[in-house]
Amino acid sequence: ALPFFAQDAGYYVSWLLNDEYARIELDNYLFGWASAKKERDHLHKTNADLRLDLAMTEHELRKRDQLIDEIHQSTSWKITKPLRKLKEAMGKKRN
Image (tube, rainbow, N blue to C red):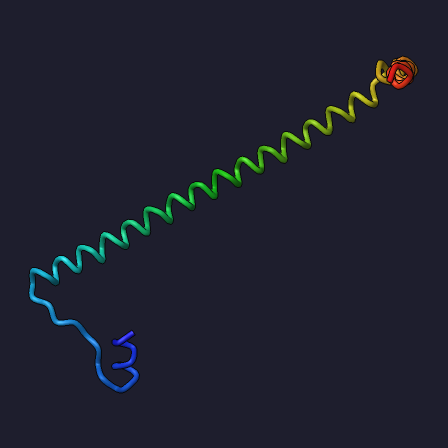
């Protein structure tokens, strides 16, 4: 906060370091950027993986729904409809 107030008052804010401390500060700065980039890349990959999983899930759901529709349109499904109704009625009667 102090540098902000100094700059707001019209002073130029800076740090004065010798070579050794400047090297340490620069290394810390670069390490921080490298860590942030690594984390960002990891999040980007995770996001891409999640999008792929979602796309696959949507594809699988469409495929499943299509298969169910095909079953419902099949002759065997239509023929066995009375038997399924009878089974449902018998199950309700027992309860």
